[in-house]
Length: 474
Image 1: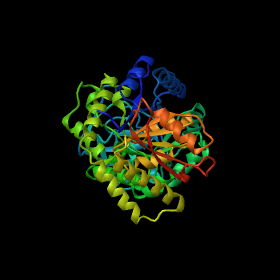
Image 2: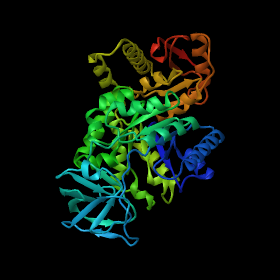
Image 3: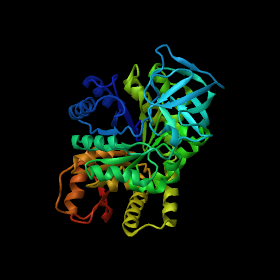
Image 4: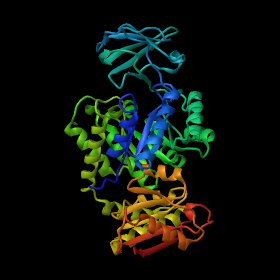
């Protein structure tokens, strides 16, 4: 089955060797993620170099996404054997980096006593322990354990606190470094407002595209502005499920995906999609349903984290996700999606460039249906034409052709787009001819009808797309 939902896989100790990276790409990875929260920068740059080298050898463009840490707060180390924080016990939280136990927990956040208030929740680990603040004095925060569990190591601490700043100064330094190294996307953690994305944009300029991670209630409330400021959005369900009631997360996921697809912003669904396969050789039925429902929602991409970074069989995980996604796509109602989008756009108030792109891509979608086209070929320098076309989730194959290798890689994050490298041409006729020739053999065959979208050379960017042709492949 032809899979059109893209796969993002995190590299880590279990998946960083050239041989494993090669197997992951062959299994279906479209975007490799490097998580800057763990390990030194040099290690991550080494993984970037490995992906670039192996992808060239395999002959498949693979984008690289660098994920910034954001304002990470950690508890001081618990004893090696672990400590039980029992429900209804009282604990003290103190600012500092000392060790922690069942009575007193050190929190590496100097402003703890001023930024935390009575009645607020403090989450330790990935939601395992929930504390409710009872009192704050000059020395400590006193809290009661509402949900208890065993704690080991130095778990993360989540504060429901608007004073946390994202991006951090460290994020800005890392963003500059990975942009210089040539990553394709940079994910900005704990975004609350569009300005948070703009701060990283000011650092990296056009050297990398930005992914806004929606993992706070504020980000959901400000989704429209954030999606407009970013190049892509991630539904980061882990921290979103800590900041918001768990029962709200599925509904937020659907809302975020729907908004992003309608507005031509690639969207990634992330966190615990195949968590069982960190240790097991097969997923749970619930995980299979979760992936399928994300596909039905219309997500551009599905993301794997620990499953490929530290899991016992990263390649099997990717194969499993690819198989589930392809099967779900066979049942997805993309025809209805395109019709609904066309209706939405007729009612929307778009600016002039947006109306042009909307009209041309709508016409291409309709024409492809009417003539049963084998493919829609999008000639694009920045990738915007192909991304705009992908909003309709067309049944025809979708190809993005660009002379820019960075654009070719970046299109691997967009639903259904097969990216291809082409030369730069001096006329629309040349562009259409060579685009069709480039796709022939691998995507379309002689006798097929294809729809070609292009813009006049020298026009003001890809939103000036003003050419639609129907071509019979010779």
